[in-house]
Image (cartoon, rainbow, N blue to C red):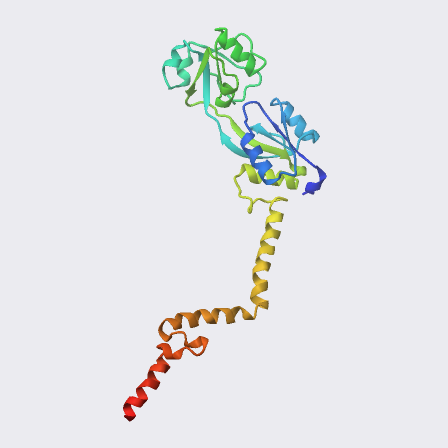
Length: 272
C-alpha cells in the first residue's frame, strides 16, 4: 500500500444516477484538511479515469470485469419502467415484464442492466444514451427500463415510472485501482462501509489513537504521583463518622456530646 501523502486531495468519480453527497459530507467531517473533488463520468469514461490515475476511486455499476480494479458492492437498485403519465402502466404500483409485451421497449447503448432477453417489442434502432431514450419515451416512441436512480435523474413532468419485478437489477460498487490502495482510499472505504471514526482504517484513526493514549496517560499520572490522594479521602470517612461522634476530631469539642465526653460525666455518678 502506498502512502497517503502521495496526493494532497482525493478525487472521486461517479456514474450517472449515483448520489455520493452523504459520503462526501462524512469525508469533510472526518478529514477536513483533505479536499475531495467530485468527477462526473459516463459508465465507459470512469474506467479510463481510474486506470489512468486521474481519480483515486469511483462509484461504478457492476459488473467490473477489469482484473486491475478492486470493487466493493454497496447496494442494489430497483428496476423501473419509464412511461408517459397517461400510459396504462401508470394505473398500478408495479408490473411484470409480460405486461410490456405490446410496448416498444427501448434499449440504450449505455444500458445499466444485464439483459438476457429484453421484454416487449424491440425498437428499430438503439438510442445512444439513457437520456436519449427518455426523450423518445416523452415523444411517444416507446418505454425504457432503467435503475430507479436514473429514472429520478431524467425525471420529466410528463413522465412517470413504475417498479418492474423479475428483471435484472443494477448494483452500485466502489472501485479503485488495485495497485493504488492508498491510505485515503482506505479512509473512503471505511466511510462507505459505515465504519465509525475509531474503527476506520488508514490515516484518519491515527490521531484518535494518539489522543486515546494521551488521555490514558493523563489519567495515570495523578495516580502515581499524588501521594496525598488517599489522605484527602480519609477525612471524608471522618466526616461520615462525625455524624455520630460529633465534632471532636477537629479538637476541643468533645464536651458537646461526643462519646468520650459522655463517659467522663458518668464516672462521678458512680463514685457519688
